[in-house]
Length: 301
Image (cartoon, rainbow, N blue to C red; front, side):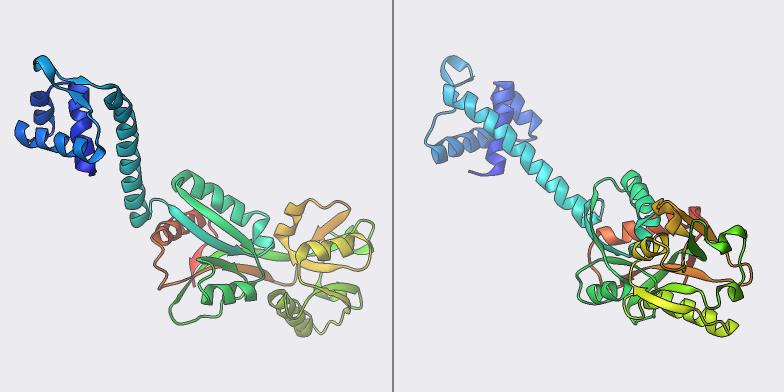
């Protein structure tokens, strides 16, 4: 049984006339009759009753018509899906992202993708930047959103967002009485710090800030995730410096203040491999670049 034979049978069954069916198929009547005969022979069942110069469906033919129509529709759907996958209109992308980017940036980007690329699905993995780099090198993710963007040959980078770092403290803290702070105000304060391993990007930024200002806080705890730092700060165990987007967590009893004398910001980069052959990737990258441009936060690295 061949698809061409199914198409011939469906056309004859719909027209109940070999001549009209042949015209719709752009073929002559004898080859059409031959295809129906081959189909019936392969099935071992008579599908059409051709007596008295009329064409009627047999009982088996009526049931087979419904099945044949479903098969042809499924075949067309499968063909269309294959074409869309090959062109990148549909498909699946695996995305890695840091916890902080999951507060606002990644959800907004996925919402934009849902509008412009509705047939592309996403598998999401929250990972620290170093783990994303390893996953990207192993082809385990298609795209990463990382803090540290050390250039590698054959990898492309795009600045996705830039946000200031702010001081966070619990309600009632003496420093909360001020609207802005200086770096020297943090001297000798108990400090909840990012881990020098898992939170290396923020650790280096904050340590560099204090070193340049000659300030020495009292580091009490080292944590890898922003939400964990906020939890300890809220408990009154110290103050911290976090990305401004940490406000999106809406954790109560916390105060955020900018540093007036420090231009300290956190960058987020979109990174992907140039040799990635996923057809959906170029479409997503183009969409993401347009989204970043609209947000007025993007610039090429």
